Image (cartoon, rainbow, N blue to C red; front, top):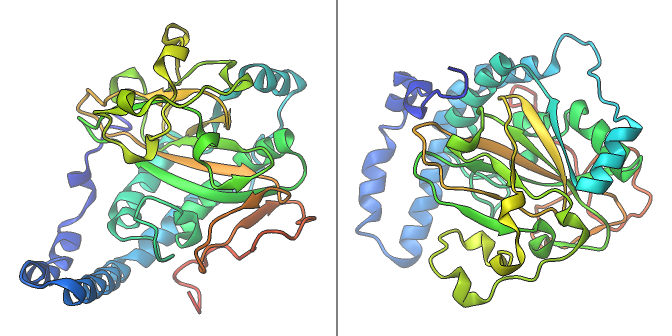
Amino acid sequence: MPGTTHVATMCSSSSYEAMRPIRPLKRGLRILGGRARHAARGLERRIRRRLLNRNRGARESRALHLLAGDGTPPQTALTAEQIDSFQREGCLWPFTLCAPETMVEIREYLRAVTLQYDCAVEGFPNTKWRHLDDPVVYRLCAHPAIVERVGALLGPDVLLWQSNLFDKPPGASEIPWHQDRLFLEVEGGTNVSAWIAIDDVDEHNACVEVIKGSHRSVVPPADPSARRGKSDRAFGRMADPRLVDASRAVPVRLRAGQFMLFHEFLLHRSAQNASHRQRLGLAVRFTTPQTRVTHQLDAYHTLLVRGRDRAGINRMGLPPAPSSEPGS
């Protein structure tokens, strides 16, 4: 079935063998301490990246070719009714970015390449902000099927500033109800997020659930005692469960290659993945150039994906070049 491929079937034996030189180094880390361990880990990352890059080019080129399509412009317009619905309910779905069979190959690239090493922007792990260093992730985030619809909601100028790969394997824990805006690193403005299904998602493998219309008010964070036992550190600002009417929850079922759009204050969550299926999704955040992004890392930059920068308050940069291109 589409969306049920396990990680083990995606990594070829050659990729497995390519990692063998790293094993003695990893064993050596156990007997090192302090600065030596930190330096050794840096060396391990560089070796891993070099080994993976040997086979990356062909996989990357294939994925980029698939995302380019056949040159036919995708249907990207939102109707007046859809815009009214988003304003009323805070979310819209499903939309199609690519066919499920195309996303199967994209998923293989993400698991075999992207998730095997940390982001090149120092300080970010392998799942975060990969639009800054991985051209396939960038093409997913900046796909016209998404950006043009976001532009219908935000206006002519659209800024891409964050991406997160949410890998939720079988048994992964719940992410509780929350509103994204309470922990976004931005000042002013409005954010619209896209959630792209890399695998098929439904109630069995912990699809996103939403409460329509909840974006019209701010739900205070839960008392710290209510958060006890929640394993995901990113959701220290989980919504106070006493103020969430979970009976209104609606599951967002998506096929691989489909996506949803939602408002920054929309209440949403995902349950524990109680199935035997993988669940990989890509969340992408957009705003306008008038919104100040407050990241302090020197290598971080925002990306203009539609229109013009009329404000000049954020550090702008270029998208990552394909690895086959000079200077990449």
